[in-house]
Image (tube, rainbow, N blue to C red; front, side, top):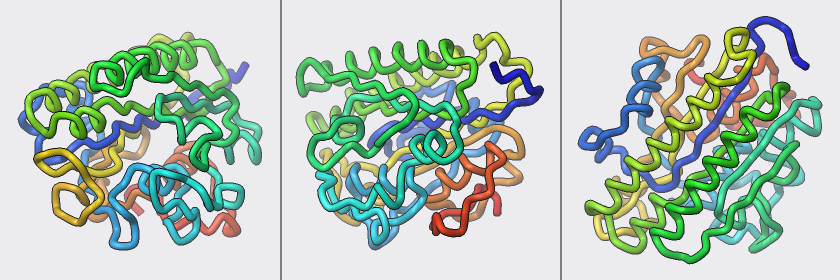
Length: 284
């Protein structure tokens, strides 16, 4: 058991397809609490990256851009994840740390369509939606959250985890960015609250230092859909709190690749120059 005082840990929660401009209108108390304790700031998907889930999530979890990781669409074929692995895999393989990744979108977690994006964390969980509908995805996200709660509480030596929630994005694709989409964002926030409560229930929580990062990959057009360069599609966001993170320390410009860099920094790891990360820790 890791009994060192103030042991660092990181939880990254990815919520797919959440429009930044709608958040002020919605009831998202858990995301708001993270923003108050740290920051919530916009991210513009760079011009080289399609506003699609595959390339954006690959950049978020590897810390390098599309030219390096080679994921250009929602099919991950031709990727270079063996050279530029996700942070859960790198931490487990290179540093012997305990990590997990769990979610319901197959290319992220299974050997399908060129995946998985998460190659070899210590624990990997996949929850298939029973049907490809907004309700099917809501149910899947609920089971993903339950699995993640279990993993957070089960593994006392846990160092870092990634939880993927996909219902918001799927709802927009089916129904546009109307009331159902907004309700799905609020449901995702409630699941975020469950994850934060699971962290606080850990037996050694008082002796742990947690960095929590919540990130979305892209936005949506009003009618639903993305892949273009409209402001609604290319505007994403990152919220984070934890040691050394505050509103005063929020960086003036954020990039998706900064997430992985911040994970390593929060764990006290100086990235090897050979990793050639494109991101920087928040606030540097």
